[in-house]
Image (cartoon, rainbow, N blue to C red; front, top):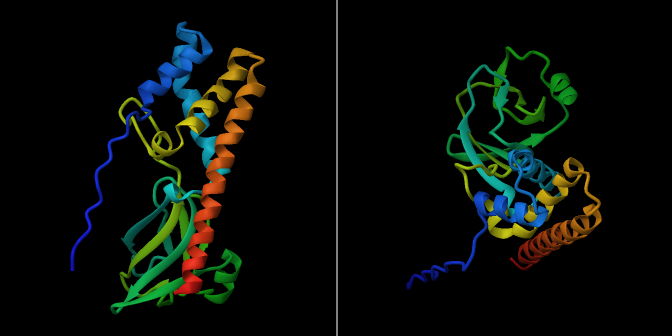
Length: 218
């Protein structure tokens, strides 16, 4: 069977952390130290706001790790935002671990010192999950989750947002700068930012529709 190798496409322009900083300063028509020093904060705040507004395919990732026998607490991956699914490997078989409230787990398995194959998990905080029953083995598991995209910095020049949503990053950063500058241009950047975010949401809804159509036809 022939293997189709996709062609490598080099984009004519890709936003970077440095180019975003430069463009923002051009828009603001400022070069004084106070504004220049505040740009990293504006970029970080824009990333957080975008992350709160959208959940896109670019934020979906998979992580694998190993549960510890006798320990019902699991550490979440860095930059975790929302769990989609959690499955464990039990003697070579994939087994889903179902999401429930913590109170349900504590009632279902009140004695954490008693071990068995985990059936349920719950969020305890932004850093940890709780399992019930407490694992009786060091099960390997896979978690599908939405993560906050790796933040931009001078040492991390690009991420998913600069590649696929540079307009959202630009107008989101400018929007964050407005209160600092006490500027009345907020409405202009708000409109541009909202348009960019709505476009991302529309694309994601279309992907979900495509996925459901494939599932129905399969």
